[in-house]
Amino acid sequence: MQGKVTVQDFVKLKGREKIVMVALYDYQTAKIANEVDIHGVLIGDSVIMNMYGFKSTHYATISDIARHVRAVANAEPRYLVVGDMPFMTYETSRRDALKNASKLIRAGADAVKVEGGSEIADKVEALVKAGIPVMGHIGLTPQRYLTLGGYRLMGKSVEIAEKIIEDAVALQDAGAFSIVIEFTVAEVAAEITRRLRIPTICIGSGPDCDGQILVINDIVGLSEIQPFFAKKYVDLRSVIRQALESYSREVREGKFPSEEHFRRMRKEEYEELRRRLQEKSMHS
Ligand code: KIV
Image (cartoon, rainbow, N blue to C red; front, side):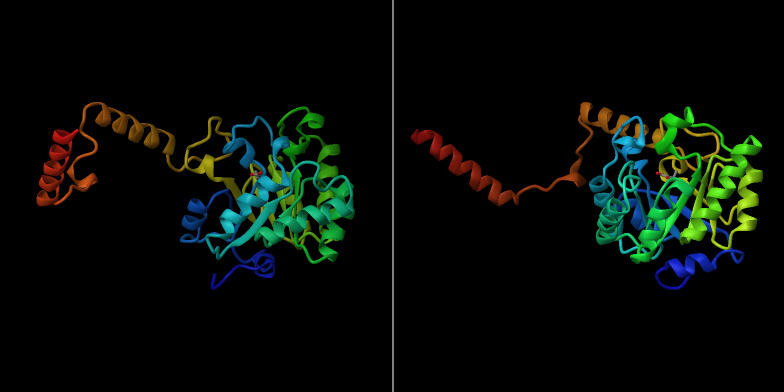
């Protein structure tokens, strides 16, 4: 795609080409992603688990996400930048949603993502009316894992499947430009994709969505727990461990640093220095 991907470009991709998104969090990987054909990057609230070791996304704050959005924006991305709205930064009121979403937009996001369906449609509508593009997130919504009874596959029963489909339509009607469908049975994700005019982005919900999203830590093999639906394309964990082992061994064996890793004084300067130091020690 030529130039920077806008929300409008993103929506037009539906039915034309598969949409590729990745959740990442930092300047270095944001730069690398710029060299690849990627349509969108999500600065997910999963940052708080993957980069800070917290046990759930409940610990992410709006300042955490804004900081990481800024890091990604500093990479001058060609892809669409979506900032995730953390737990309790938008559910509480339209006013809170607007105040917090504006922090992510000011940090450099092109859009924000919110978890939930019809119950948050009024917040989505308020954000869109204020000029902030919104990506929805339905199916498994990790911010609600306590009420869902854990990180469970969604949509297996007819009742839950119907509710997820209704939520998707409610988000579209409220003005969302796209919807992430997480860990939901493939049939339901496919049905939603057929019904909506906006693109659906799957994670663990099968091949029939308009696009896919994976978390960078899973793609490169850095995650401690790899979800079965996330494909590991390289085992960076063992590459990093091997590099650290080699570094540790070489320092202990005196092999690092070697001549190419440091600089010496010119010989005459060094001799003069030694002469002066010797002279000083004779007079003290
Ligand atoms: O926070 C995140 O990384 C996400 C993706 C899993 C969609 O919400």
